[in-house]
Image (cartoon, helix red, strand yellow):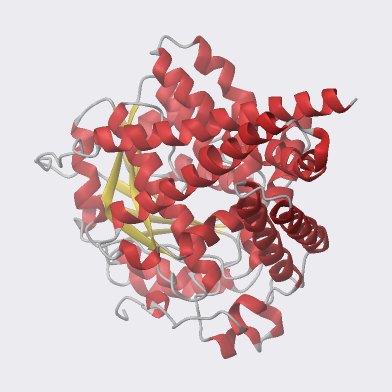
Length: 498
């Protein structure tokens, strides 16, 4: 029985090792292609008609800021249309109507589209907007983003290439320094945009539209079959379907669209649950088509790694739980060394290199954030229960609604937390499980030190810290604000008044 458990454990580690090597592969792609940044083409002689779409659902604290920034985009007024796709059930609709009336007086073309039902969630709203859009190109911005004034002048010229179907900008972080939680989220997102998106674009591999801060050619959306609510990540779904049709994407890391990060642990976990489950749903839906498509095998293999990477959460959770009893004597000494190499070198060190390179790629002061990189690894571990559950739901085909990620406009802390109506969550019961795992791995780290397993103890301590941090702040949603706050960042910035 012990041999069966040990062999099963090593098989799980073998799969995890492949994903660790895949992360090193992305780093190689990035360094190989970082000199191949897209060169902005010559502007078109006549600027095409563009529609900016802003899907909204109960975003009273941030929607005004986003609409103002969209209305102040530098683009020929007779070529620009702005749609607010409003599914709200609170006072957000009144705020939108009042603001649009004021901007319409300036001659802007504005649409306030309301649906009787929220069918299809965000994908349904974008489908409705597509039917009414006059633009040949559709820029999508979530309600917590700001539209840079030069966004259209910097993205539209790329569509002079008839094969370009989508252009994606990089996300910035308005409230990066609001708390430790927002700093860690920023590091994780910077790794995605600084390394993953850049590497895949430069290598000619499939990469994803990120749901916001990007612009689509309308004919590419229609040719790919339109927006679909079959997955929780309608952006990833459409991206792959369009690229399978032969459309190409362009990623612009120098074009930054500021956005607000979630400030509650429970809100961030809901966002991560949606992204994880949607990615696995997209893999179930499209991976077979990718493998059958007449595209290079390097693109196919990268797509497999991309679409299935979230399965590391349940596999890693199972393997990590088995580590402590196995190291107490069930696992032969040579196999213990192999296990330590996988956990420490292929997983922990690869993650640290990945996120550190992401900071180095995007920020000249990257070295000041080195101490935060281990914490960023820890919180990804702490999300394992939440995201493993998302993977299981996706694999079992269980449906779930599209839950928005609450944003608050990054108001001062006293204004945010003294108002009970603004509290999105009151704690997650899953936090008790995560705190239990923190205790489990903490005891395992002590046992590893006692047995002089010097490579095992560090990552067990990392696991304990990650589960403890995520679990505690899941039970106490206000703690990151009250205890681990930073200065109020430029999230309070607003464009000039009308």
